[in-house]
Length: 591
Image (cartoon, rainbow, N blue to C red; front, side, top):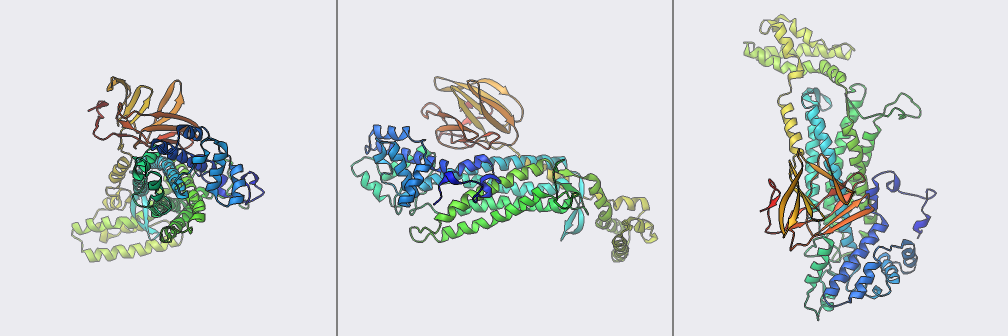
């Protein structure tokens, strides 16, 4: 086994180590973070066991004191000897915590620690992806609005069909991504850890430990999970159900599929015969080592390449769920170390690149018009046919007339000429006897033949960016409460929340938080929302600096889950009212 200190570019490094994915996502899946979570869980276990009278306060305090002193090098030395990574970390922790070391892992099996840590990592990783998906959806909505009424040629079977609009085409992507976002939100809200149920899920070891305690195994589990702000599955084997990871992988594969189609469409539309869309191209960017003139859609191609990889990963996790035989096997262990991080890092990269493509998408209106001029009259002949029949023409005769002229027009286009269909039809006496030439020209202008696409595109853009949650943040004694149009700052007086001042008006869709002064500075930007549970608000800036506020439920009726960073902002994922308490969003007061 290689030691982590020896990993360099002279040996194999995964591209996900440095090329694909963000640093915040890499930190979530890092070895240090995993071991820090293990220790956090061991401390939570010990704290609950202290409440049950099983361990001493001094032992728990000692564990808490050494909780963040991760020493991977030492743990690897031990692992080489004992061939068990979690027990190697137990020994490393125990070497540091001389007083509390003896009680680490009391009553637990490895997966009581590892599966709960994995659930916490999944939650944080999903949180980062939620923020990035929301941001991408916001940029998509902006582009949909901008181009909602711009006509463009639609293609079915990769052949010219009828006109649509640029915004309506983009709205298809936005609609799919909104479905992906809702699926990811739902799965995050349903995320569960294993809890603390021992070797085969029966809690037998904990029942034995607690035989002289007023607490039951279920009580102990509940107290630990509350400390972790995590729900537990009611029933498990040695592990939590691996189906949970398969469902999450399917959701991420859904995001990948949405972006794959968008990127492939962009590649088709960027090809010179059309040239209607293009991705940004830097002034110093090189398209080809052999052909200096090339402007390849490398970012769209990267999306399609990574998305294809993401699409394969749910199959591995399906097998993990299906092959967790009886109370478990180890069939899943090795591949999960690879699949879960790469699944999230690849999706993270897809969203990063996809956001850049959408935000900086270049639309060539001249090329769009050229395509419409070439192929639009064919689609518009349907309008001409309807008007001619209304004016008394024989439908079958007029249909044949249009067909003959259309074949002649296709032949001209194939020979490299412009589309003569409009001229052929507007100068044919069999046409003009029913429809004047000028009116026929108007009908054959396909740019207006887009139905209600502009209105539907605008409606979709509004629907996917609509604010759905209220939010709140406690800073000292002041509670910041936001609803869609206003942000209020409130303060507490004898337990009663009162509106203190209106901080800002306008349409608030997102709050970005950053440390500043003696509290936090609130910044405003589009497309964010808060939601969640628990009684701790935890802020992390770029994965390093942290700010923590613990709520006193008996005084304040608000709860929080966490806030995490994507390297650009801090995203709150947690806000709810305690049971039986209702907040009036119009005033910011508790009802």
